[in-house]
Length: 323
Image (tube, rainbow, N blue to C red; front, side, top):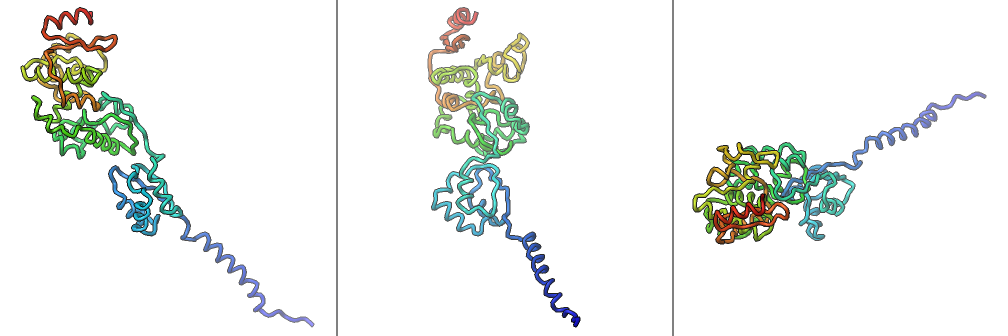
């Protein structure tokens, strides 16, 4: 006898298919999948603000636990700047260990002593750095060297190797390194010199950087520069004339020009530093050695500095070593 199957059995067959569909949809829409986050750490950013940002981005579950683990494991003192790719499936220690290593996304730049801002800009390919030649580049350095607000940062971008994110990060690191490298007693030393400010001392340091090599020669040359300033003599430094030129050649027109960087003709310091000096040149500008010398030249073959006590000795040295 034919019997019609109950409709309930047909519905039972559909139930497993429905459940499977719901499970697939749930898996596709699962909100517990790892969250990826690109963290950018700025220069001098503290770990507290980093923890707050990571909590807000749901990368960590607790700011306090994150900070506690950082302190307990000595991972709170060497946080690097840069951009870091993080995920919510990383635990706190994994994140902290990553932040204690240089970012793979950072750029690295080595700045030699004596580079100008234009040379730094060309080497780094960060054109924004050129604004540091003007008053548009403001940093915390303006507080201790007010002149940099109007005259730019030439002279204050300390030579070193840096890892950085962008132009602003690089500039901040260079100016902060400058402040760290300043001799601790620089204010006391400035009071002994015939100049008015730290800015003028860095102008002298920049000339020393370009003129002579050894520490003692730099200190002796600094003594000559200050003695000439005190006696209202032109400094007669070729490196200042070459600052705005793209070659190493000084013409008769250059020597006759009323250019503020023409220290062969005009008295006093040039208006700005002519490069970014290293520590030895800065130290020498603050710690000159007094001597009987009024003149010096640099022998071109081995860079030996030859000193003269008067004009006759100086002319004799020129004839012997430069001609």
